[in-house]
Length: 249
Length: 357
Image (cartoon, rainbow over all chains, first blue to last red; front, side, top):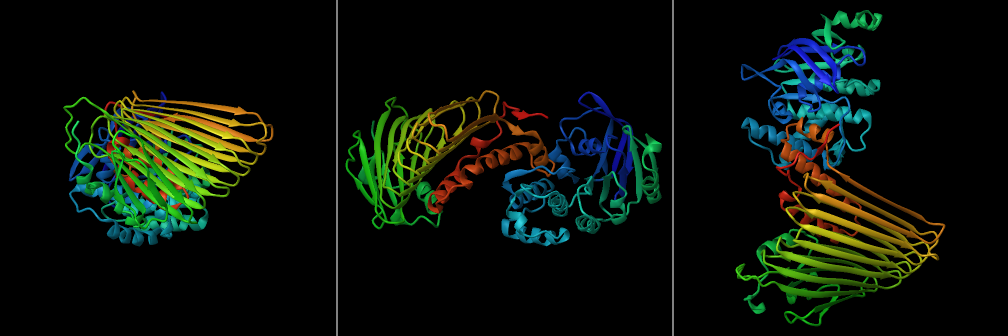
């Protein structure tokens, strides 16, 4: 579903990703682990289309209707409409736009793009209320401004709620475990596990092994100095937990 | 210029639809005027309305007296030429003075709307005489057109414990000039002034406010928000004066402008004149563009750039309404705001007006 080949990218003139290559297939869960500053978040934002970053060379190919196309030329909204979703490490507060209105705008614009029927407010509210259960959120959250005044844990749940509503094909979860206590982590992880599906690929970006106790990945990669330096199975994460990242620095 | 006789005038469906959409507005609370002359409405209003002159060309004086504890009234001033002819270069003047005398508590909305885009000048004065301990919640909207010029004056003198809570909405004209004068004359008097100014194309909106704290423990709070698109210009000058005897007064003023285009212009001049030593007075001004992080967040969920920019521009305007007390005024003003053309808060095609990180 996703083929990243020899990607080189800069942020503020500094090389952050160096010849990074990665392949992710439908149905798989990949974990990308790495120390701070290794380029994890940059990678996730580049896949989603963050405008501040410049790709120098390499490509990100994404499968659309059986054909691979480059994501790099697409606007962020087109990527979203094609099924790419990024759960933000720091979800952005948008006061003045209600969560429900925002979700419906997003949902309907994706429906319109894909030629599916849009949902009216009543129908959509019922649809979302059902999804709220996945992340154990109260319906009160729908009336509040997007992430406005939400606690760290509420913001992360809200990201997974959006994922549940928009049903992406490729979901990248950037440090979704950071700032969560153990109960909130369990709720968020359960939510993600319920969204695992044979048609959907999930990329978990995390610093800690802890998340992987709850969401068990098929593949684990170590990212250091902007490139993937080691790939393996679940046992690689265990080893990192024990020995730290020092071996890769 | 030929205009349709007043007797044949009927309020256009768009206008009644706009107003009737609110369940809070009953027919008995509405008075209509057309080019300054009363054309109908309100027999059962809680406020007493007297119109003393309705001749075209002469100043209309609308006297509203509210003795009731919960008076409310919606005044709709419509302007236009139903023949819709724009061949004539003649522009006409519609002078009007509203005098509100409030003994208890009143909610008043004054809507000035053009029903077609012809050249005219509106000279409006809205004057409030509020009794000791009285309270007014006031909404005023100008929604005219590119050919119109507006000269608008709002005046109020607040005695002891009186409150004035005003929300004004300006949707561009070739020029709107506002002058807002509030005297906090009595101990513990209080005013809140909120303005939302939306300018597009080559429109100009100028506002000068003069808030004078003349007695102690008086409080003023001003929030002026503008959205400037295309080559429009919005200017705000805010004088706040605290007299030497007005100890323990509190004055706050905040002016915020959102520029949606590179050519738009927003100018703010706060002027504080503080003559007492035990007071709190603050002012702030910001001029900004849409936030890149918010824009990316919305787009990453599937909203295209124009829709995301529009959603953010609308969200920016929300807090003008949010802290508004007085359900009647708030409801009508929100309905009008919701009906405004999207272009006011839209993507300006010549612009990339965002702040990059």
